[in-house]
Image 1 (cartoon, rainbow, N blue to C red):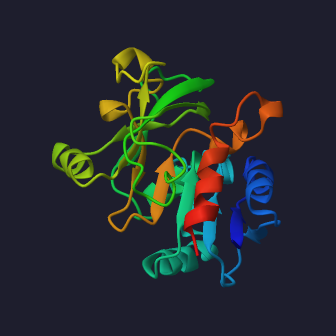
Image 2: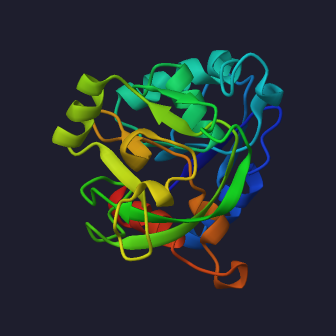
Length: 229
């Protein structure tokens, strides 16, 4: 599997996700600078976490207009899988590749901690390494992760299996006490209609090696390797 990681000014998780991809795929991903106007043929594109353009205007708003994003959108429309993690999720929202918005955390504070997630859908390329209903642990670190969409959109996401992850208690119970940012219905990750674009606030790349304290995130990258052709 050939992967590309887009690097924006202010990205700080690009190397983390590159390491995780290399561990699962056995090959180094292409590091793609945001000013590039062409993307080589790859099997996966990742928009990493960080603070692109210092989060000026809104988180992800300026990065959404980077030259490379025009080509990322074209590739996604052709079916290439695109994964946006944290700031990458914000970029996907800002450029219209996923519905809804990501607002300031309900606490109005930066949140940095491990959270529990319930895998609501294991039918996508990104969640193939998990079982539906499985409970996993991943870190979050964000200021603007409060997912919001109108009620009709929320219902459509659930009805069509496009909610990939939800914040939950360790036993899998979806409860407001497990929600770190105020996201509607504890939503932590959503898919596009075709299922080849995933945006998520938690960081799978930060828990993809036992030396980092766990491997729940690695299953995502291993699953992609097994399903992406």
